Amino acid sequence: MGRKEVRVIRAAFEVTFLGYLAGITAFSRAFSHLHVTVYGVPLFVGELTLLTLTLLAAAIHLSGRQLPPKLGFVGWALLAILAAGSVFAVRGLMAGWGLSALRHSALVYYCWLFFLTLSYLERVGTSRRILGALLFGAIAGSLLASVSFFASPALVFGHGAAGHTGLFAWMAIFTLLASESLGVRLLPKPLAVVAILVCTCAIFFTGYRTLLLVVAASVAAVTLGGTGLKSPPARRLKASLLAWTALLAASILVPRAMLRSPDRFIPDYAPVPLGDALAAVDFRWTSAQYGWSLSAILASGMETDQDLVDPTRSISFRSKAWHEALIRIETSPWIGVGFGPEVLLHPASDCDTLPSPTSNCGSAHNTYLTLAMRVGLPLTLLLLGVLGALLVRSARAGRRTARDSADAFTTVTAATALLSFLVFGLTSLLFESPYLSSIVWVLAGIVAHHTGPREVSERRA
Image (cartoon, rainbow, N blue to C red; front, side, top):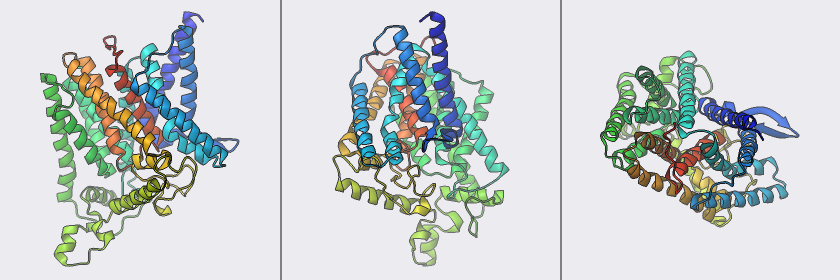
């Protein structure tokens, strides 16, 4: 194979890889569904991308007649998880679960993107380009969500935008703050400020309180020295994070003091007045949608009915789903229920679509409980050990790269984004959603590349 052909293959790999990442961060679920079916099996962008990138990566490696890099604990552990996942998938297919078994196996097989990310970084491009594609998609998605909310206000389960849109927005905000603070400018400063404001609006419109936990954990990891950075740029990053956190708090609390709680039911999936939509979202942040709050109930002496104490039902909904998942984990703690068996953890009315192999009815809204329920505790703990090891390695690497702003930016940004996604998974879908799982494993690949025994500096970025 000639050099020209190799360049073409590398270019195809990069366009496919970065285009996929930008697409899923900008359009998430809408981008991941092709709405094309072949012999009864629906095709999804993620699976087609995995296949395409695998073939291109194989061609690139074979062209150079080079063996894949040596694998440490993280690599071998993920190969073991992939092998075990294949066994679960085959068992589910042999039991006749069909499409359901295939979709559940996506909980595991998307970690193949970890190895594809390593191939990209070893043979094709840089981490900066990956972070740039994620940043572009996240800003575009935030802008689309904000414009859509103002143009046609509507709520979905009380949210003005999807929770994962806010997660992508937070990733973009941190990336921009880190780039400005560490001297690795990705956008002109005026554009960066506008992008941060747009992404902050997108977070507000979600009304998704899990994002408060995500932001708190990420800011704590950085400000408490988890990155190991003690330089003036690092101090600027910590200061800018705290300043933005104050901005987020003001965006929630100031409207809360100015807007009246809606005194009537605000329907979902239907156009509503902008004022009602803004009030409903803002009051959702403070757990008092439709004017009810625990303090008001206690002050009035009313009975503390669960729907009034928890008007958004986000707490009661999750606690029930977690309880149901734990029951199934206790029943089969070692190998789980497998891929395929239908499990309804909450009422069908709380599913994103009618109960089906592709709906979220069998998800506990805690991705780790879902994993343990499907594949058992040992495999789940191994996966958590892999991700935990990467975060520990990133903290150590932060100390080694403290004098190199470029390396520090890449490591800190990827590791903090990875932590953000993992915290998000505590109360939400993560590995159950391919468009979220993909980003997790790409970020894990970046962290592994920059913190492993074969750590390579990105001076060429």
